Length: 308
Image 1 (cartoon, rainbow, N blue to C red):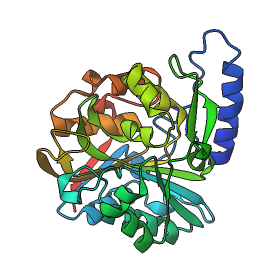
Image 2 (image 1 turned 180 degrees about the vertical axis):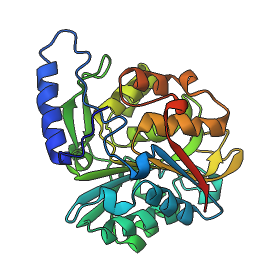
Image 3 (image 1 turned 120 degrees about the vertical axis):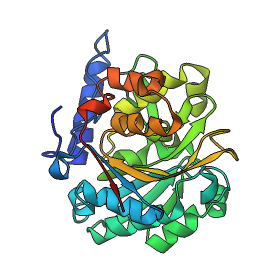
């Protein structure tokens, strides 16, 4: 798949908007999507996924990012970076319902050290929960800015070029305008979709989540993923919620790992192993692969697993 390294994120979005406008005029509306998919960035030694294993969430996080090139590979001087964790509810990290706050802090600091001018941490979740679960304090310690995206005016409607169900979608303007977008999900069970990983986490940057649940949830997730360029994905699988997700409490498995990559299909396909699932049996992962978003076949990926 073609690399987008040679164009800026803003130029990517400009081309996406133009293509979306063109697509709206074509009756089929299929095959002209502009999702990122595998190959948006080359990574160190051609690694597709880095899997760092150890007892420290922060060390796992930093080692996984370093293995695919480090923050300077992704962050340029003056970049405005937006991070999307999974910060729902008021549980603490050991209950595995929220992205580990210490990882969020570490990624903010890593981006700023690499030259970012500003790091926003955003989600369509209430501020009270993010204060209770440690996300707000982590953002403050890291030097970032926390935004609770609870107002519709904070979203912008854009065309979904690959959409069959989603023709347009209201997406957080901060994400659309960012120079760099980092998705930081946590691996956990979900009652409606079996798992909630990087693709499902994007439902925290769109406005009308009820519509997804009222139609075809899996296909909506896949089509939203085809629309959003993710420059870096850092999967928190240090603790994995195996049951009663997404809010818990439930059975927690000690995963001891962080997975870093740029392809959401590949990241999610690999992470399904923690749930003893086959990725092609998870509908939104399969559909996203069919839409050309990324690679579902782990045998085709270069995966670097190592102990920290």
